[in-house]
Image 1 (cartoon, rainbow, N blue to C red):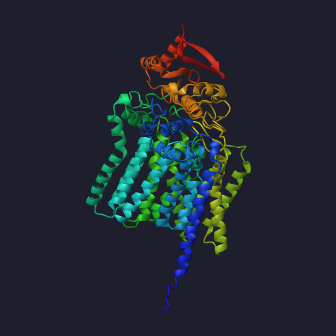
Image 2 (image 1 turned 180 degrees about the horizontal axis):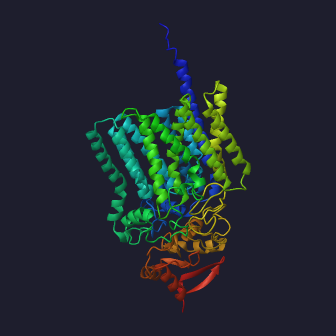
Length: 637
């Protein structure tokens, strides 16, 4: 038998492939450890959604609709796909901290993996590693991929959709385009209209770079549009057609209509600020939720969460378009820059100018685009560093990132003060050496590249490690250390942004319910043992063991007892559900055992206020663990 011979380049190719696979595996392993380490320190994280997961493990109706309680009084104020993932996990592994939070961490690892694959395909493995590392070390990503809010699943789905769009452009395949549409549609089922923000970018990229003729590209996009409608609309159609009397009230709506929630409170109201049912923030000039404008992402509320590499990403986007400007229409490198750059610019603009409810953790949606642009652009410029223009652009990206990191770190002046100086010095030195000219010798070039990477990643990495090492809970978590001048949402400096330890302990000045006390619409209640035992006694005889105003108060009692609690008024306590007459009917039929007073907002507004007044006038108050409670089975007289 003749000897088998291999091409001379084969050993190099094999080693290169092996090195790429090992690097990819190392990236995912580090990300996995980072997002899983001490995950249970966050407890239930957002107790509001944790209680809904608990309900979904007890009732398939609650599972489908996204009910807050297993007796299906009211839903959470989002579509439920992100809950479904956690509920399946909790049904398999039991309801506990890990079964709720591990799916979020795995969604984060998958997001990093997709960014690596997308960037490596057109820019090489080194670019993919840098891109994935930037995503993994973005502070707000480390926060939200360890938290049970809708954003983790949303970001994973949209990242996959952007990659699928590029694959469709590369191959001209309708199937890849339909996959992108289906992923975006499923993203809608995780966080409603925010998923549609990238739709214009998907259309533009495929129209400009898709392989087929223009008429065929338009036809494919129309089919994809139909797929998007089906993927995002099937659940909406079922809920709207379901008789309202036999399903839970749609939380966050003002008329028990899912369409009102989609287009109002969770839709255009977020842009215009006209949000019926919102309690509104107490932010600075610009909107009730903070200053709006082009620089919003760089101010104290958002800056340390995500903006570390935004200046570099924008500079590298411009550089990438410059490098690919003369390419053919179907140039995939340019399409990639347009895809990720468009995602960053469009989503960033929406966040920057939205006048309605917006929280800094929303910025996690920008992390994949930032990572992809930094990874692809920096490696491409490094390869072309013999060109003075490429050197100057790359040196500028390193220097501006180091300088901006100094500014961000200086907003927490007592937090490792030497770090900002080291980053600035090393960044400027590395930038100067890159700009000076081609570096003689591989060793020196490697050292300069490593120094530059340290300078651009050390700041967000430090914030990320602080985030991972700190317990976070509540409705509005925040990554990194405390920042001087943070005024978003409710309260003064620091507001109620951060929650540290147990069920959450915000900074000085923010409301913290006492142990055994009722919660509020930002923090869950923390019932003591006597109150918990009291609620659990005879729980099998009642549809709801208690009722209380606002959903976070109800959530804490649900998590402590494992039994349904009616959340009067929904998340903000302002939904018109139930009406006083409906509540009186529930009480007369013996379906609610107790009414629990308390919480920061007390009696809420509208029907919640009327219910509270009626209860206080007709039932005797008692105090258990410092909480005022009314037995609705024992009226006065």
